[in-house]
Each structure stands twice: as structure tokens, then as C-alpha cells.
Amino acid sequence: MKEYYIYIMTNKNKSVLYIGVTDDLIRRVYEHKNHIIENTFTYKYNCEYCVYYEKYNDINQAIERETQLKKWNRLKKKNLINVKNPNWIELVNDNEILNIDEMD
Image (cartoon, rainbow, N blue to C red; front, side, top):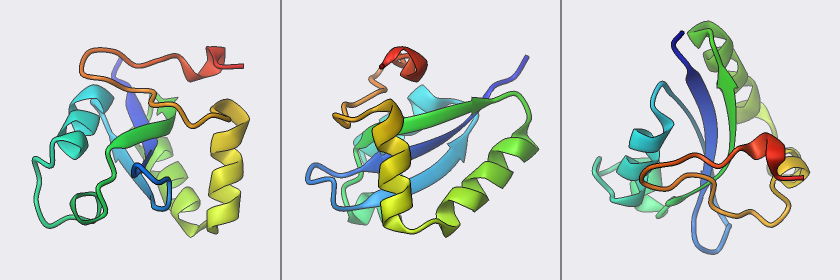
């Protein structure tokens, strides 16, 4: 079964939040970290750290959730991250995704 992710990236100072959707979280975070795609929001603001994600089996649900989160204010987004990842640690590296549900 195909998996889809909504994810939140931030920069070193945690001053910027970016929300995206993908079917390959490791590849997509790698692209952000290494600035593979130029002239994008994440490129401009150095969003290199994935601090939150949710997994879905339906692309439409993932896109719907991404759209919902993008409408939230910054405080609400920060609170969402803080529930599962209070230390805002990096959840995705070049070959693994930390289980956000085991972070508590």
C-alpha cells in the first residue's frame, strides 16, 4: 500500500515553518536539506530540518490535511509540533524516519 506524508520543515533557528506533502519523505527531506530544487521557499529560508510528519494511505486525505495546516497560524502549528516532538529534533535523515508516535 502506498504511503503519503504531510511534513513540517524548519530552519536552524526554528524561525520559519514550511508544510508539504510527499509520497517519499526521505527523498523529499534530502532534497530540502541539500537545496536540490532552487528558488523555492525552503531554499530561500534554509528549511533543512523535518520536525513533524503525519502518514496517510490516501493522497487526498494527505492533501486535505496539508491544506488545513497551511491555514493555521504559527502558534497552532508550533503547538502541533510540540505535542509529538517537544524538543524539535530532526525526525528524518538520509536513510530513516524516526517514529513520531514513539517520541513521548
